[in-house]
Amino acid sequence: MADPTPDAAPAAGDDGAATTDDDLTVPEIDLPSDAFDAVLSALSEIAPDERLRFEGFAVGRDAEDEDAGDAGDAAYVLDPAGDDARTGLSERDLHAALVDRAAAVTDWYVFERVVGEFGPRRAFLRWIEDADGATVEARYAALAAGIERAWGQLRIAATITDRGERRYEVRHAADAGVPREELTAHDDPLDAREIVKLDGTGRYRPLKTAPTLRTGWVFPDLGPKAVYETVETIYPATIANWHREREGELDVNHWRGTMERQSGIYGVVKTWDRGEGHEHVNWVAEACCDDSQCLKRREWEYDDDTDLDVDGGDGVFPCREPCSVVVSAARKWTRLESEQPRTYEFELTPSEKEQLEAIVDAVADGRIDEIREADTKEGANRYRTRFLRAKLFDEDGNLGGVPTDPDDAE
Image (cartoon, rainbow, N blue to C red; front, side, top):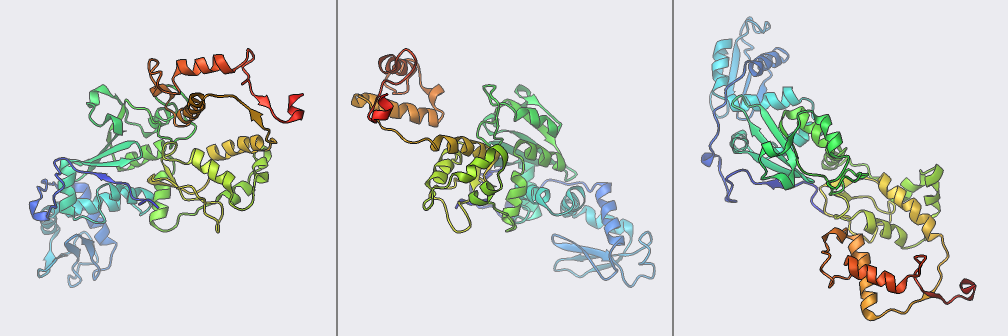
């Protein structure tokens, strides 16, 4: 099974060598008043003997101060790691101490107050900058240079302001080197609904996780909430399911259970079960759930006890159940497979047999548009295919085979 965590692109200037905090160029960070006010508010909500903890230090209210119960007049305590605690600090003293530690304070403020409660959004934003594995100094240095992450066909770039605020850019990975002014800029996450509707040739995209996302657009300056909404609009539920998988809570609905719930015109799929081997479901998965067709990684199998023989792919998004595209296709295949097989006899040269194989492969892999008109060496070349049709098909468009079953001959 593939690693469910997407890869990070290296930060600007990264040569792949190991980096220590001593080698980092950490940007100067101002302590914004709203971050300091948030600290004071948080301190007023905890007991005098408790501490508000940051990376490398903690702050609290001075329990020995007679006015400690009144946040407005309280004295404060600073507990630096490895140093003696400083007690009896005034609000001004505390502010000065936190100004010297503005990176850690703004980091706390961003995730605790701006982003808020732990969940998919917070986990995603922390993953972008490796907040669960790197120090504040390392992350702020990387953010100052620019962090890039890949999410499907998206390139997400994260930077930081001198107030510790995160800003994000989202664009198609294929547009990574294109100047912003050459792309259509958007600032509303809901604009992504139009971007994902059609592919680059103007065809409707029924599957939003298909690798057919069109290029030519950019969301140049998004905040933490807006970048999450943008990505989830482009790839619905991918962050939520990625987070569930990381937490060990991904609820997978396998093929058999999903098909048993189908009703109406889709209820016919429930009749399509070939017993041991379930080769028909293998065919469905091979057709629809390949990396070339969908960016998701299939986690569903035939049922709880029966795995499919087809690889689930290397996508970064877990697929927890057969999607509507799979169900719709399976309905059509159920009807087609219900036909009784017949035997036909065709006369083909070896090259014509190979050409038919090449045509099927080219259509299945979506390579028809890549085959040049002048390249008649390619079996799926348009002119070679038209020649084969002229030779083997009758005027009604029927392949001129001879049925070997006497009933068919009638």
